[in-house]
Image (tube, rainbow, N blue to C red; front, side, top):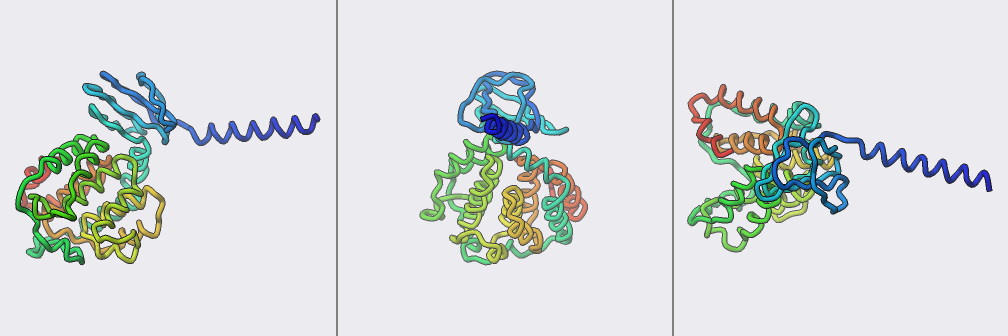
Length: 292
């Protein structure tokens, strides 16, 4: 019996050590105001948050009406607005990639493709992107984008998901591509990069595949690359990074800058904005970026 006890103790010790390693803190929660709750290990059980609570990769933080906090991951502070649910994994992924790897490659690619303004529209390789479906307004779209910019990703998804652009695209004053682009950003921000990839390829009405990346609009190529980098899909991320990105319109470049900011890639957003202002000085960049 004694050898058995030794084996059992050893197994337990290894298991506990494995859990401890897997659950090393990646940051802490500070500046808590109002109702803020934390699910430390992603079990679905939330408790009231306290200042300096440890944040793990699996952690989820949610705020109620009037609640806010700051998630500090490394040296970067990520504000969490009221009535928001934030997966810490999405913040960790942003910090891991910021300033290097895929994100820097794709930002450099966009910067290199800038230059004299081009007259042609952004090409998507699909009939869907060529139709200017812009006729009437949509409160759900306007509200969804506002929630996204406030980093209230779950709420933004709820609003944007209510819009059925495939059945009645001519009812809205935004394009089908706009809808897919903003919803993809919201899914990445919510900590669901796999869902973001699926949503982006839904634009083509196809399953995700590296061979179809060149058929996506450039904005969605960027977002697919970000999401694939977070999921560890190296082939898809590399295909997106190697794709020649030419965001023909200043509006498209401004969208990418804003999306990078919202998702926590602040350094890369600053690099791209600096290049955009240098390459196209005649564009009113403050006006284009004001919404973000």
